Length: 202
Image 1 (tube, rainbow, N blue to C red):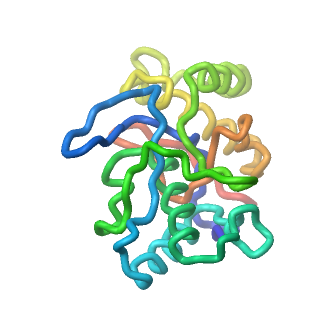
Image 2: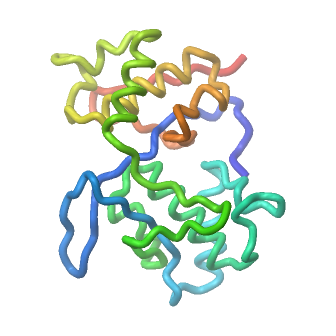
């Protein structure tokens, strides 16, 4: 389970998409969905360490005993769910699915039954999220000339706007839903001169 909200910075970050890995090359395909799964050759200890690390930062409730992804109750399966959660939340870069060679990028959706593995989200949803959030919060930082304008992508601008909305509205889990296109993370997504606001919960 994710750590309870307290003094630890918590950020709202939507499920992002970017890299498609095929063979020994990597190509950017914004429309291509990819997932991170556990390498079948990885040791149980490595997978257990992955689960512990990821679930200390992100909400792994789905693999708890009453969660929709608990069965099959195997370390390989639970690690795949957690590793994909981390991979999606951090931008779907190859290195976000490495985990010391215990992860693999898959082009096949590992979801099954009621268990859904998060994946990329469409440009239309990202734009809707930007429109909604920026009607209520100040998104000038993502406008041309702003410190968070670059990279000038929907992914970047939506991430900033959604986090700002989440922070200003009290950091409630329900305020980081955005039609199930977002995740709460404890890793600060700030970069360069672009700072993602994080307000302490009283």
